[in-house]
Amino acid sequence: MSRRTAAWFAWSLCALSLTLTALSLLISALNLSRLDAHVYDYWLENAVLAVSFSIIGAIIASRLPANSLGWLYCAAACIIAVAYLSAEYAIYALLARPDSLPAGEALAWLASWVWLLSIGCIVLSLLLFPNGRLPSSSWSWLAWLSVLLTIAGAVWVAVSPGAIGNLGSIRNPLGIEGLPDGYKPVQTIMFALLFVAAVSTLGLRLRRSKGIEHQQIKWPAYTAVMAAGSSFLQYTVSDAMGLRWLEWAGYVLSLAALVGFPISIGIAMVRYRLYDIDLIINRTLVYGALTVVLIAIYFGGIVVLQRTFVALTGQQSTLAIVASTLLIAALFAPLRRRIQSFIDRRFYRRKYDARKTLESFSATLRDETNLDSVSDDLVEVVRETMQPAHVSLWLRPETAQKGKYPEYPSPLPNSPYSTGPTT
Image (cartoon, rainbow, N blue to C red; front, top):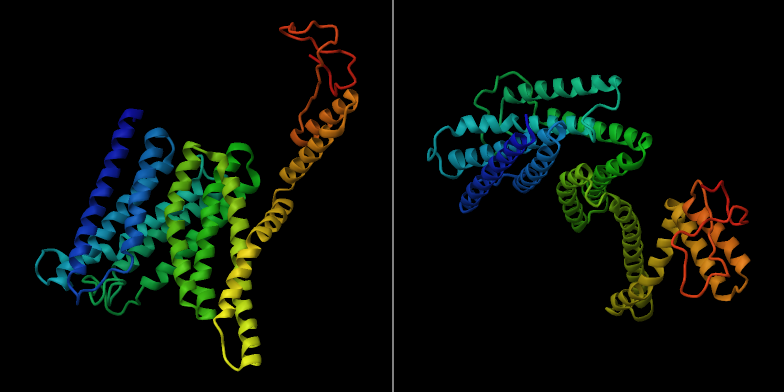
């Protein structure tokens, strides 16, 4: 397939996915107009994934047609769009307005299992990222296991009896009575496989890779950590603390991770602003830690001050909230500086040391007047911060006339400021 043909085919798949998603949203709006109709639980997630994967997959496949990742994402987007359209169509034809459209049960059956194929495509893409090949031949068993589990899970769900998950009271028309319901077990197995593939392959490649490939892997690894953190916040921390707003915060973060995952893949593959990931990780660590500390100070301050007011006056006071708000406003800037310094020292030690070295050298330049001393310091700073294989310092001869500089000044062979052989 030529590059032009590949681009045409990839963008055709993208257009198909976007069209199916638009139809799905239209039918979803019709379903929502019926107050008694069932609402499809994952309509937003399906719409976001179908749109993002289709666009990113088309970009990758059109630019790198030999890499299988773009085609896997195009396939995943089309499958998600088909599953979403089938689910909304079945709800409309069987629940919102019964018998208004044909083949409602057939599309309900299709929606019950076809979504598993998209999970299989995403798992394979993680195993093949970023060069389209497995980390080594010994990893082929995991790829084949992913394919077998995807096919087996889809077949099991397709013949499971009872109500179809997320479709309300619609039952599987091809369900075999006597078989156990496979929706929940298969869903757990597939997402566990997705987690294992993400952690194992991305972690292994991140540890072994260097240079550009190392930066490429950082992008999806960052979104994977974000997804894991949002799930922990949404299902564990919120349930343990009983705070509804934490569950919503975790849901918003999970949506951001869903959108960010295909975008991170696209950035990594086309290498657009590839090295910005270090800044993003740094800011996430700083402001994430800062948010946790400020929230703890805010609620801790409210509890302590309210107890103080109750002990002194016998009643609660709104001054506790005002005082806590003013406290975190005053602590924001100094806490941010301290946390930034700690993160830099702990996770970005080389850059932190380089910045401190440059600051020290800048302070020295303000007071130093000895040229030999400044030259020694300059060479040492370059060696410590940039760590080159060779450092040489050229000085303009004092005998040169003012305004007349040699076009190519020759190095000084016996210069004390040369730390390697001159060429």
